[in-house]
Length: 250
Image 1 (cartoon, rainbow, N blue to C red):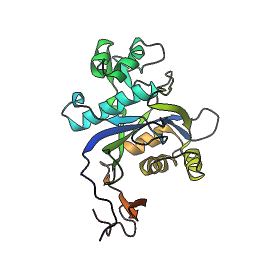
Image 2 (image 1 turned 135 degrees about the vertical axis):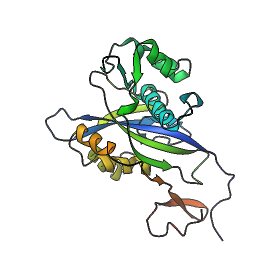
Image 3 (image 1 turned 45 degrees about the vertical axis):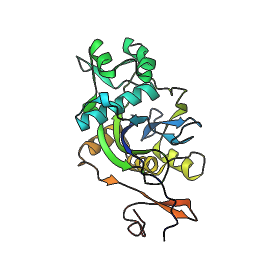
Image 4 (image 1 turned 180 degrees about the vertical axis):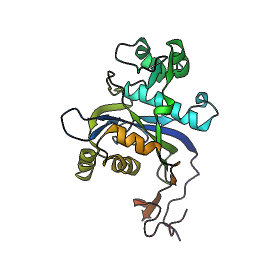
């Protein structure tokens, strides 16, 4: 008999996350990634360090791939203040662009991202995002579950990033290896998908190399962790391929 507590099924919502990366400018080879700390009051991932992301909305459209990419771009604008968009000449948005003044409106749902871009002669940089990972929140973890696509994207030069000080309370540019070391030391708390994606990008020395590799990848397999329960409490997780994964009740 399982010691897993009985729960009502939790609906799985589509979501998208983006890893903004840039080359280091301190003379050291390697890249940096933008990370945010979620508010301590968050229902999901309280206090965790994450990448900008959130759920796919109905107004993102019926095209699944485009909807996820638009969601990633919108959440990046809302949470990091970075608008991944280009003008008719192919130039990226830079600080001072009038579209950036509407971050709060997009966050509140009063301003549609696609309409905002169109109004300012911009196009969301959908093709610049490379889909690198696909994770689903395990059953039994809580009241919310997400089917999340992780994308890699270059941070536009000339546009600064900052957390929204609402859903997120801190932010930083950090090398993937440093973030992983701080997580192992207990300084930063992260979810398994965040750690796995940091491990994926940790070996690249330039953004160009990381993106070139990522764009050659086939659609990534869906990873569904399973929770290990002991005495009715969460004792850990198992990932596909790990010993004991297949024996855990689904």
